[in-house]
Length: 112
Length: 117
Image (tube, rainbow over all chains, first blue to last red; front, top):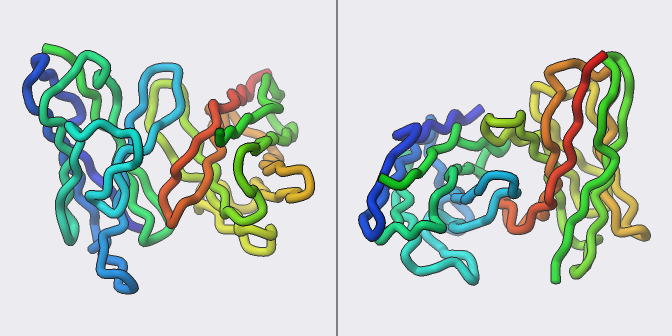
């Protein structure tokens, strides 16, 4: 099975500053049928279900603010929040779906 | 509006069984694969498995294979998760989710299952 490792486990960012979350997979997430990477990102706030932010590593879900962006290839991926807002305080998960489907352990984003 | 509403959670004794339901609305349920994901309170997300459109194909995470059974009733727009021989480690919030093309684009609000005597 593919292992997904996020870093850091938590980070504190000031309002308006950039937050960067990394996700590393134990195998390439390239989906050969479309040459895209099978990696999604979700946001989860306390007491709520996860919310899809990004799929195919960099495609933003409809309604997601453009301060959220995804990048990466192969086994290394990044979620960037370009200018942190108070409502972005949450736990963020990466998710591979090229294999049997595995989530990263989560990264908690807090305000500094 | 797409909605997924889980029900059937609660307190169950070890060794017992439980069936969770996930009622779908706002989309053509019969055309979507569906996922189950669980989350121990305060911990991360764990993929439990998925089921195809007509229920003929299921895939389970290694950790639950043998005790968990997915099914669906497309006439009732409802997804089911049957858990047998419940253990303390099955205690979690269980989410159903709609499959897009591998990722989960819509999630239910979750159903808490607590296994305790």
